[in-house]
Length: 72
Image (cartoon, rainbow, N blue to C red; front, side, top):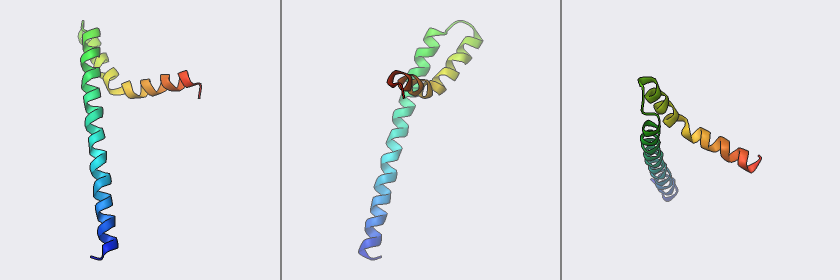
């Protein structure tokens, strides 16, 4: 390999490695939201299912309300 190809390969590896860390942060956010929503909706089976569904979609709800706040 010449120097240019080695530099491109290293850049792609670093870019891919950085993307993996964000998934872990989102996973921790999901676990936190799941614990919160299960605690709030702990009652019946269907309320726990609702809590799990809310934990999956909380980023979309957050962005929606942020855009409403910014009036975009």
